Image 1 (cartoon, rainbow, N blue to C red):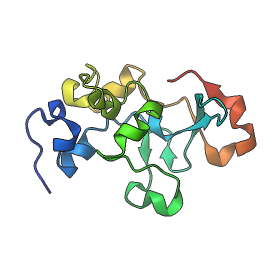
Image 2: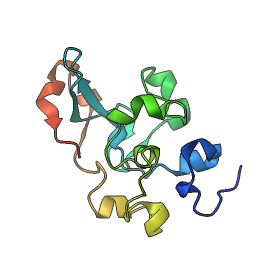
Image 3: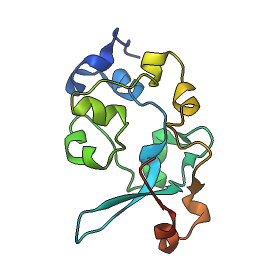
Image 4: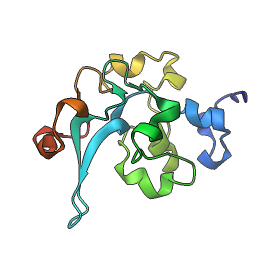
Length: 148
């Protein structure tokens, strides 16, 4: 495994090694919420319906390494793809923030030193979402929320 460099999160995203790229995730689970995008307007709305692989308590993917086998439409975020999809990433997402040259928030574990801070300050989806396995897709519009 490649080592993490000190304060790697301050580097441009295209300079991160694979381990650093993965370590940038804050573990909030927001990107795993299903979104509704209206083709005619391009408007994007978040729902409180999580991907079927999202563990709604830990805010982690239950099969991260194999997620695309189960959810083929799962977007693989990469240094190359971030420019195209940053607009639909949560505003607090470390990848989005760094893409736009902004610093990480104080609650991010790389700054706070604790993976629990994201939950403690209410920046994760913990306790606020339901699984898509429990909600028919036709009903997702009933679960529209402001970006968490």
